[in-house]
Image (cartoon, rainbow, N blue to C red; front, side, top):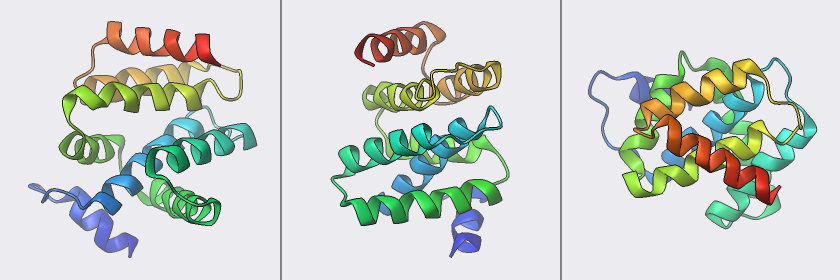
Length: 146
């Protein structure tokens, strides 16, 4: 399953992704951000579950299954650019700021903002076409609601 997904994700001219594949790519990106600091805290896992359950209206079992698949995919995926390209193709520009906000909620879930997480968020924001200023504003919104 993942081999086919990775093959499609890494194709030079990938076809637009199905909604289920886009969900998996976004969840894998959330996992990648959570793991960027070398730790994958239960608080980060719980935050990912809350994000995907809310965003996609999933049951707890389906949420856990999606996160488990995303964890496996993230461990096998070659780079972050592929995930962001899949998301960029699947998510309209005006909705991508919500993706950045979701990523910031994961980064801030363990109350320890790490330079590796910050660096990865800068890269992801840029790849999604989101400016540093808009990403910073998204982080500030997340910080005030947390």
